[in-house]
Image (cartoon, rainbow, N blue to C red; front, side, top):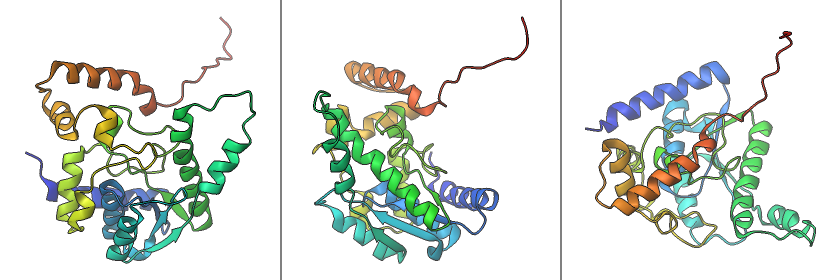
Length: 246
């Protein structure tokens, strides 16, 4: 039932509208991992704004085994790009944390994502830009993102589209098949997304769109992750001060 062409065209128009209202003449700044989400986001921005207004930022943390995919994407689209290795920044933070504070595994996993987002904003502010969020609905649904890391951004073309739908749009945009079908990995934990999650994106996407799932344990896992991670999709809670006397 998903109309990839209509959705792609509407998303392109939405991106144009966003920039008209929130940065006329600005550039789209996209963190390029070489996966489907950053590839589709960059391609949509190039179609909406013209490739001369899209800047890709490759951010390896030391050596990145699959960085060739990121180079393939920027070369395929013909967009300007920068390579900024974030390892020194990550190590700088970790090496300066007091010795009596135990650094947790999740801290090591999330810190590079947060430094990468700071890097994107540094590039954006230095090049008249707006930062693209590249998260999709499937990841957001179960909290598979880093708050103030890859979950941040100024505009989000894919956050209402499942992984399955993003891949259909990627094929429609004539992106290289190896980018669209690339096994999703976070590049930090050494595992694939699906290994980390405990279910496949196909199972998750079906459940999101139809409410159907065959495995009761996976349903429970998805529901728990969704509930526990809703805070990532909400604005920061604020104390509401009132000057009115009671």
